[in-house]
Image (cartoon, rainbow, N blue to C red):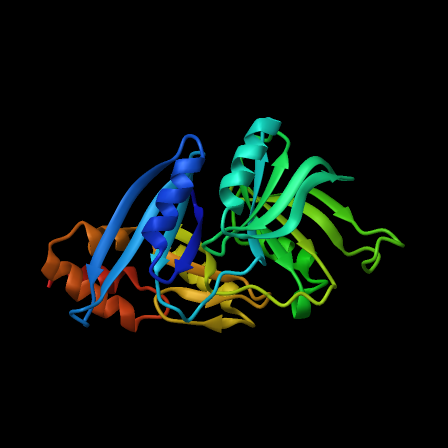
Amino acid sequence: MQKISPYLWFNGQAEEAGQFYVSIFQNSRIVKVNRLRTDNPETTLVSTTFELEGQTFKALDGGPQYQITPALSFFVNADTTEEVDQLWQKLSAGGFIMMPLDAYPFSEKFGWVQDRFGVSWQINLGSRKQKITPFLMFVGEQHGKTEEAMRFYFTLFDHSSMNQIVRFEQGEGEPEGTVKHAVFSLHGQEFMAMESALGHPFTFTEALSLFVSCETQEEIDLLWDKLSEGGQTQACGWLKDRFGVSWQIVPGVLSKLLYESDPAVSSRVMKVALKMKKFDIKTLLQTAKE
């Protein structure tokens, strides 16, 4: 089971975006669309879980308060030039091109695009076992902290490793020794990272977070306490770590209580969950039994 899933926050487009991504990537499917009523009778909370190239993604129609930025993008390794062209054509339609599809010193064919839903994709010609990789870009106040962040995350997840790190050299336009490109693994899942000293008008945001499914309260306590140290805690298992990256630390049982229980149980659990910051599994289970 995938431990860490990218979680995208939309304003009324979660289901549409999920369907679009599933339509353009192979080995992809909608796993589930959940509609949960809130205290406001006119509001339905829509969330969707989908798989792209066998990897799990989650999305929520959370409202207009957060906007997705390129600080967390998705690096796609395409096997052929035809696949690159097809993905580029579909993802760039109605979007914004950040780096044109072209040959670069680091790739025979590469392009960076923000699609019409605001999600950023780096399309690259090059085969890799993990087809789609979350890509963290440390800018602004977070510049220079990439390696520190990666090594901190290693301490929190089993089966973690530094797979590759390339540093900027003198004369490349960035501070010498800072991270030009890195590949690392957390719980066996691949991630990428870089940092840039340029004046980018964006940074990390809650609109694209990392959702961690936890089996025990001990695991929740550890991740919550460590990741929130020096950062910010928020409602419903959300937090922002000291590097600005947003996480959701969530018990695996919560989804079952909310979406697979009868409406009365779901409603009770939802009301209690919304009042929590760090989730308490025992309280959630007791609420479901009342």
